[in-house]
Length: 498
Ligand SMILES: Nc1nc2c(ncn2[C@@H]2O[C@H](COP(=O)(O)OP(=O)(O)OP(=O)(O)O)[C@@H](O)[C@H]2O)c(=O)[nH]1
Ligand SMILES: [Mg+2]
Image (cartoon, rainbow, N blue to C red; front, top):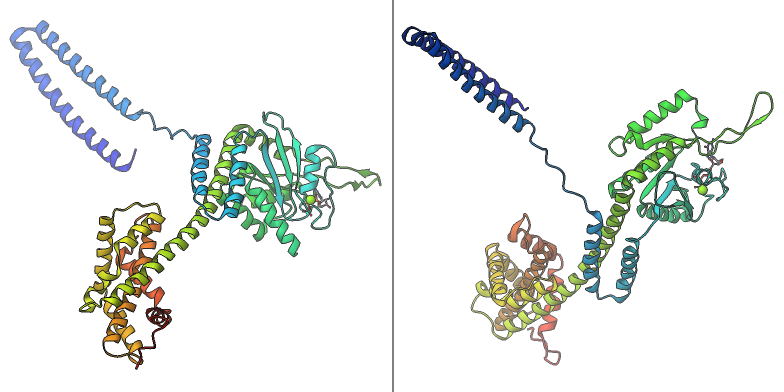
């Protein structure tokens, strides 16, 4: 119960006691009056009746209290990752269909097919990663019970990932066990291999992260990144045979402390994957047995209880990555298309104003921001606006441009730049048409932000978006003026400057 509930409960109790005492007092005086008037039988009968009613009321109250206290807690929504995977794959297919770049589309389509095929995949993917020479391959050999990969004290012994079929007691699905090249080998080739190892880990259902000492910062970063991706990870502290039992416990506790918030303490286990042979004091060689039981137990438990969800979560994660990739390509493609539209309309605007200059600059913004441009930009981003809606949006942006002083600011800047070379009517028309082109540009780019942002101007509002576009375009304004002036003059016409 919360504090306010306790307060309410106590206040209720005090009031009930007071009422109860008053009730008892009244009941007693009533009883005595009936006793003197009608005798003991009637008085006792009435008293019994009243007590019965009170008892009934009390029992009802207790029942209500009990029901409120034992209200069933709301269960979390059932997770249905398999269905989510199907929905995501469908959404990605639609995204891919919109990508125009054939090669990029084919690459992503192949990944999409691979993910779709994985929905029916049987084996669980277990990927072993860790810094070079921490004993990954030796651990794989022990797990498989045979020499599958080369083990050596030198860094970078394993150069390509190897996959082995594996079965674990109590886990119904077969397992694909992957040994990977070590992280941080310090060479260019090592860096590429590390990238690959991280990529494989990203595709794993479960990652076994092998360390042979306290966690280095580089290892911590990789682990953190994997957890942020949503990967399930078991941290195996290998080569415990090198430490006294008491030190082993201390190191394990240290590791668990270090990864607090990233991994549960039970997901950090101590092992000795392949302790080397030692020479006893008697001079005889002795091969200590490997100690991998804690890892086997933990991995089996995770795969048994979470295996199905791990597969689905992993697929979901990969779908999200593919979706993000497709989205990035689509964004770039849309940006290119939208910028081409803005470019086209800015010169249309300039041309119209050049031919029929306006009486003053006040109407410039309205002439510049064209409804058709807004409609076409919307189409690029999948928003289908009517021309009337486009006109409404264009008008409110034109008003914002005027209210912010952008129209006058731009016109006077263009005028100052051109004054040196032009005069009279030509100057007025040139200033107006170049300003119109520039304002169309600012408006168009502002609308791109709006549509890209799912038809929202964001926290800064329309004025904020427009202002940041004005700032972004400012540096290139004089170059824009030159370019626009060159465009306005027909090629065969002599320069109109005086
Ligand atoms: N003391 C001890 N040494 C071990 C253990 N496991 C592996 N080693 C040694 O650690 C060294 C590296 O073993 P590998 O299995 O090749 O290590 P790796 O992580 O696969 O290395 P890379 O392939 O280079 O990334 C070898 O000298 C092994 O003998 C262990 O449990 N205890
Ligand atoms: Mg290796």
